[in-house]
Image (cartoon, rainbow, N blue to C red; front, side, top):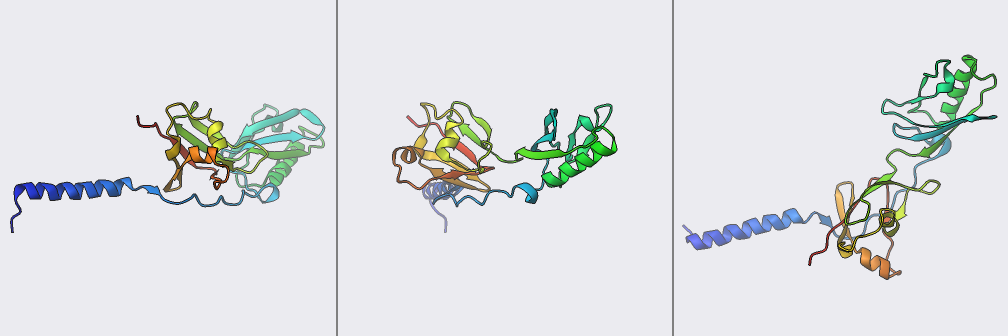
Length: 212
């Protein structure tokens, strides 16, 4: 049976409208899942490319250095070679095991008689989040040192300079993995009894522009 032209157009419009509605339903309803436990530290942590390490030697304060593990898993430790060009494999080791290797190398190369190195992870690779849209300073931010890599969303946005006057704070989006969650930042800021929204590494916060 043939449909009249006008009716056919209306049916097609409804189908297209339905498809568009489905494509727009990317935002997950409900609260963000609770943050995972913090990454293991100390002996149980495995150094990764991108980590920032602090290397020091007992009794040798002038030899302290900070170095970023490159994407091949290597770090440069000048004290380990007479020409100042020495690379050490860091990725895959614990901080204490890497410290032992550096100490052994320094002693075997006779660069330090009684070398006792210490390695601390100053900044973990991937321990960052991004803030986009209507904030004063959009960009990628690392979590503050000395605390678990978790921040309330209000603090995470504040570190990006806070929202601009054009921000639509009632419809802030948080992308975590493949899911996108909608957060009413305005309500969180004005009603302290609201459940906290915690930002973790890898999250992307987008503050949209409000509609006039």
